[in-house]
Image (cartoon, rainbow, N blue to C red; front, top):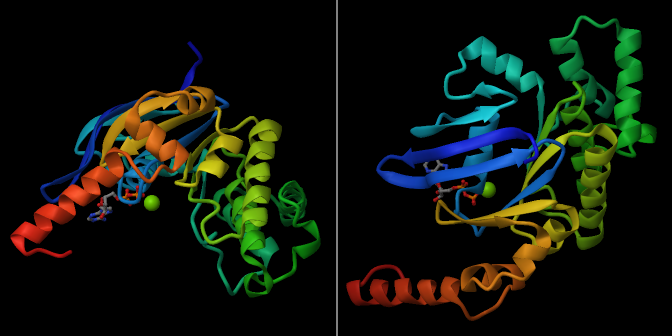
Length: 267
Ligand SMILES: Nc1ncnc2c1ncn2[C@@H]1O[C@H](COP(=O)(O)OP(=O)(O)O)[C@@H](O)[C@H]1O
Ligand SMILES: [Mg+2]
């Protein structure tokens, strides 16, 4: 068995009485790109936030880089966060700072490196994401794809061991989206990082994934290689992977509508 970077151990997460993750169990292997798939509201972002340590599980645990996230205190969590990088949907750049200053921020906050060294490191990160010529631009001058690249340069500023991406191609055109996918592949190979990518876009998932997991309404459905997913005989997996209009997902939706109709609910 390959070594696990992250072990998700029977994780339960509730909001109020609502169970949004129900006993999820999975491993993320060192150096792989694991893609978390699922429809809207299936719990993908929540699972990512649990792995990042932004939310605590109500049951089970997550062991990441050898430590229990559930049991980390605030300083331990801060130390853990220095070893991971996160690319949020918007790129989440500070609009009042240049691209270079955005990338330098984690280095200035978390290291005692002299400015000349930070300068060199920022240039290296920007080169890695193809933005070296745009270092002095402000975020407002960047296209959507460039913002993602800048966010990614900042996410790798501290040389993280794990990179987390939440819907990295959301809001991008297909070509830019494919470029970001290529960047995710390049960084995984060049930096040797472990990558966890949440998406509902199949083209993107099949380009970047070493392995995939499918969540549905907070439940773990299946995990496997892209080939295993494509060849799955499970009706739900097939409907999701091939975007079929007929299958358990749509049957369920119609069922809900019927019940709503009977009960006079929304519909
Ligand atoms: N902070 C929160 N408070 C209450 N409910 C939440 C919160 N975050 C997520 N949820 C609910 O949990 C479910 C899963 O959400 P999420 O993980 O964002 O799904 P996905 O990323 O797969 O679209 C959704 O039904 C969502 O409404
Ligand atoms: Mg989400």
